[in-house]
Image (spheres, rainbow, N blue to C red):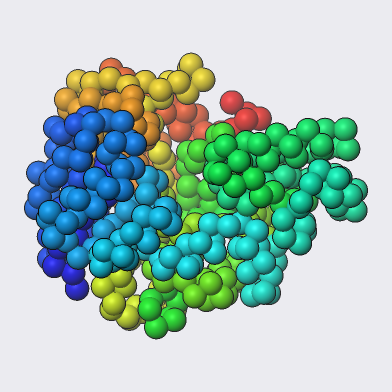
Length: 445
Ligand code: MV4
């Protein structure tokens, strides 16, 4: 096992990784920007290094500064968390060149999954269903037009380097296809420096279901079941749960097996999430795979009892994944609500400011992953997520009930948060009755 690592992140995930390190006897070095210099979690790390001003490009996204901090503190490995440099191929390469272990997948697997066109081909090779669509990249708008007519509308235009909805267009007819294709390409070129585009049949009102997997250096891979992340607004997840409440036993086994096939085909190592769309007929299609630990990983930790960050650290240090698939059990239901410093009454506008009253909920089955507390200044510079509230209960009805109670207890003042929005969703008849899809928020709120 490592004796000392660096955490190249901030906020709740930095604290989450510090906690795993302490329990494993690993010294944790955390980097911070000037905006985070008073963060209480810094005191739980063994060392804290200031790497620059609030602006991410001069701190959390600045590879040179992070590598300098790693050099000065003499760490063996770097955990990137999620966001920032977590899926940055250049960063992983530089870590390798410096002889520092990147706690994540090998560069080759990162590159492969980072290209959605190649990931699609990989899934097909692994005999996993993908959404009907183009074979590889679509070169120009004319070819897109031809293919769309062959497949039938609606179609969805996606960027090979995409993610989070950027460079994505839903198209319903020939008239709008050309401009959608070209604007998607231009947007992708600017956002990712890669204008490569592909086409898929648009799946109407799908659920978004993802499988948590973990693989070691010896080619042993296991899954930790699925999470349903259908409750999202503008590509930002708001509520996640496990299990997916509409999957039957057989489909679920097939889905989890499909995720493993992809991870093995990619010669993947460490934690990954394999994303699928689930259509109205309960048919699933691979869409993409994420080469990082995700925000919603606690949902899986609650239902399986496994500490995924500890597994990441063990695997990265070369230990085998001493875990059989059979031994991984799924118990009960877990739900996570993301608490963002945003105003639901004002189109979810950011609501930064100093927290003067903070009372977290408690009691059985409740977990809170957060870095905030009384006196904390929510900076407008960073992501608005300030806490994750996760509940674990025997049944979905109980989990919803506990979550509502916990959200009602939760006091975060005077800033606006998404707590009332989460309560509205949890009380909605369609959510309670499992009749939601990825368009639920836009249609109902
Ligand atoms: C889709 C889809 C329907 N059909 N692909 C969204 C983000 C990225 N991970 C993939 N996404 C989707 N891909 C096909 N073939 C629906 C989504 C999707 C979505 C699309 C438009 C607006 C909001 C959305 C919310 C969730 C998923």
